[in-house]
Image 1 (cartoon, helix red, strand yellow):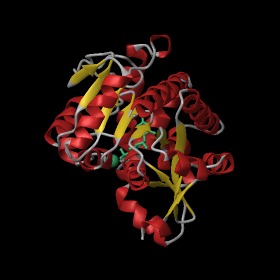
Image 2 (cartoon, rainbow, N blue to C red):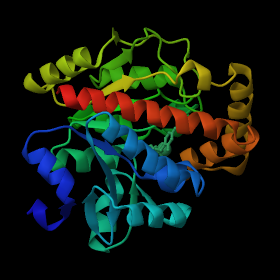
Image 3 (tube, helix red, strand yellow):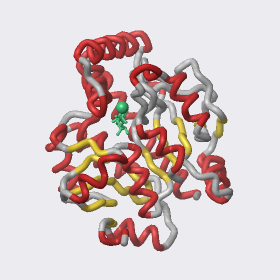
Length: 302
Ligand code: PSU
Ligand code: MN
């Protein structure tokens, strides 16, 4: 049945058949996370990084109603140019996009779902969604967190952005049984910076140990994903004061304009980029490569 909807490219399919190493990559980061042409260049380069580290990249999106696992260069370029016109697609949107034969850029949640359908266990991205500031009133909690609670995929990221309430995000993950691992850190990174003031659940210092952890969790059939938090390399992290001010300004403007629902995250990301004059974009690009590298190493050891 699923076969009618899923379209896995040949390279990825062959790698999965021989139980090799595959790393999933999302597409909302391409359409909504970065401007053109940096989005497309980054998407190509992170694929190269994954290959260099002995894994096969599988960029995921929905195109013309097909759940695509492993986009071609042309398909990535198409999504990158289409940008915000592409529908940001999370779990609730998938049936509509598929039945109407539309294009959907998949979020962390939707990419996890399609990865699991394809049999991919490791996924690299920039940052995950979480509980937004004021989430206790607005109920703005990313569907990424619910997905992590039930779908068996590890998500390698640079931690939650401080556009979110990091404390509430961690509480939500704890309640839902989602382990948050720190790669060579006991402090949770906050995307643009290596520090957040919050601890991870467990620090694991090698890709072998992380692979062991994942294998154990999956073997024990403890349903759900894992957050692997990988701090941005020191030389690319942002000044904490600069980024904090930019984020505060972005959050304030979103509140004034009443931005909500699925528009809220892309709005905040775009504002932060504007306020920092592109400085945040540089950091964002580098941390994606860093995550692609770690995810590939973990996937090859699984
Ligand atoms: N955080 C980032 N960059 C991103 C996103 C989040 O630092 O590009 C994207 C991801 O695709 C993530 C989605 O899954 O935003 C979360 O959106 P929401 O909060 O609406 O669930
Ligand atoms: Mn939301």
